[in-house]
Length: 347
Image (cartoon, rainbow, N blue to C red; front, side, top):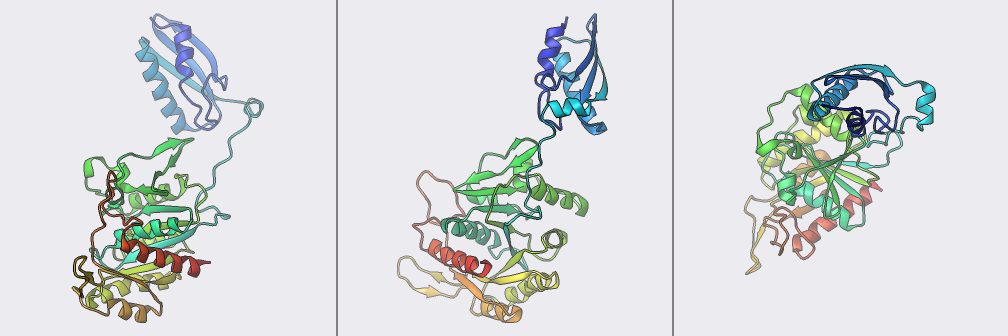
């Protein structure tokens, strides 16, 4: 049979959803009756929010029944202004990336089509910026085709503190991806409004801290997600990724046109898979042809920031990150050079 002390012990494990203190600290328990295992409570929360009341009721009821309660009935009231003031008031909201005073530069990495290595570029651009001493975040905004966690070898998941999601940090870069919130690589079957809500969560409910740059790996093309991000980030700058093939450059021009249409600044073009260089002989082959990057930069009136060869990152001993070019890899130097150009253009 449950007793009074057990009820208090349970309330000690339940937080007021707005004050972030447990219900004993807030003196939330206003009335209590226990008769033959039936528990009746009056609980005072700091705000009259029906959704939070329901969540709190479900949590308390479940925990009391685990302790032996036969039935639980909870009524809610609201703490007085004086009580809230004595408790130190409501905690200030932590700033978000979209706060008016935020100084983070948004760099969106886009492409006209899939398969051009946009995510590889996003990941390694983020590391290139970090190697220049910048504080960098990476947002895998490719909701349907998320790949960043796997490329970076991330196995753990974000934690939550004060109702804010803390990004996973890997090699000095803070990362958030849809892949963290999907079980067993399941497909994401969502429509526009749900995608927009998830993007809002990524910007407003994630505590990124003080970032110099947030690199966004956009989905390919000009669909709902890409358009949503363009509307949410009016001051973002954009990099367009293409391969040397003329058709790829032609398709990539659409992504650039959308950036221009939404008044975003295009920082430049990156030509990925520009050539293949044999590590044994040093011979260079232009597997996908030549000229795509130059053609695209001409169409968009911008610069070619860099040409990245077709290669796999060199494996690292005791480190699993199959998509990352580390310092001892020659291609990392190419990304360092691109990162330096990006910094110069932004600053």
